[in-house]
Image (tube, rainbow, N blue to C red; front, side, top):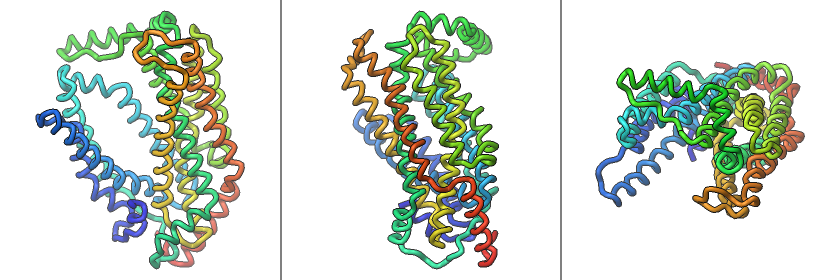
Length: 428
């Protein structure tokens, strides 16, 4: 619904920027409310949680979808889009690192050990920062790509265009499959560390790289300054898993830095496919490592993160190219509905992948709360983080053989659309 409405929004500020302005403050307020804990009694708190979270995800859709679609109209130059997408996802990965590695320590410090108070304080800071940057986005961007055909189109026409757009169908399936893998491996890694990786070797690894000494030194500085200690998981499995996740994110950021140059030279489709396959090979390796091979597991993770990082901005830049392709074919542009379908696919992939984690654990006889698991269960966990998680990625690589927007087609589409817009006098 937001995609349909955004495509039909016409203001002096454009189609998508106004949505970022309109939702900035409500998003900030609802973020704070959703992470606050009023004294409403047990039932009241449950109702409050449902209402505020439901409102938050609605306003998130109204904010995030136009924000994503904005990348498709800031510029018609596909190389500039590669650059925009790379910058965007470096910021995304930095934010993800902050949330995964630093959020809980920040909460405990801000609340002096009280998580509820800490979350409210931290979310107040995050909300204020978010509102400020939404406003910066609104005031400092400009929608330059305008459709040649200005008359209103019917929703049914937009849907027909989508269903007849083969690159869009391929990217929709690719988005679902990519996020199935991300949810499946992301949800299974902790079990891999808890029940397969040797706890003694994980502890030895943390000592060898100096991580425990670093945490102890950091806590010495914090406590000497009168602050709460940095709360890092103390058991080796959880601590190693947390560091494993953080290392993957850091090298994803490094990989993103190589994305634009490679895509400009070889085209997004080809770079995306090759990098995805290479990253999958390092993910497959998790099945074959013995429990003592902690160093090998970490090296595979950072290499997987690096090559997967190359693909991250390309997925969304390719979706913007699909909007161009649709306009090139039909003379009608529906950027937001194209992005909305991809975001729908993203959520669908995460849902399927998350369900697969629970389903596979049940299939292989996982015993919740047990100190150890049966050999069959451990083998199922190994399969989940490697073989099963790799299959959707490999299917995406296969789908790209039917994705026709290669480097040469990108140049043709960009050139033809630029000529049409100049002829129609709609170049911003």
